[in-house]
Image (cartoon, rainbow, N blue to C red; front, side, top):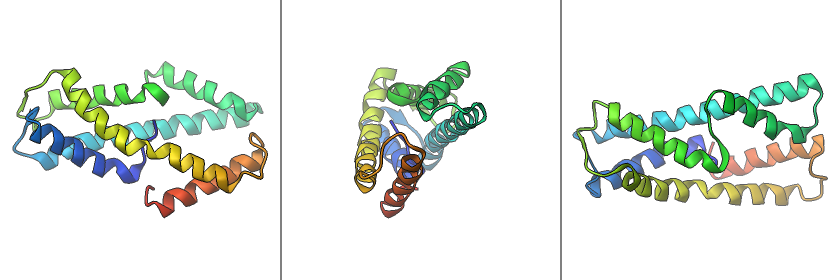
Length: 170
């Protein structure tokens, strides 16, 4: 699962709206609840980027091949209890529910955690499935390059940035 900063406010607004209209959550300040959810999503993105940078630095300093990067990132994240990849959605939803429990803006929660997660999962999936489309489009742009080479990595990042910019995701 990949969250894009350009989608954070949209996701937060939709989760809030669905939970309120589904009578799973009560609030007099829906905008503040949206901000609470957005803060969780933004913190997740910040931490993910931080682990990515740390792992890249370690690979670079130690002269490790690029295929070592995911393992190093996973090890760094595991040390701090951070989850990314396929398990990230449950991690994020748990964080959001935790915020609800402590937020002064959530008056009442009428649903069990698993019911809240069903609603949140629908919204998160809808807005994160785009990652596969973006990856596929970026890869098509650089299909003439050998994957795993430094040139491929540079061009892949450039192609991803172009696609994200065009789709207004960054």
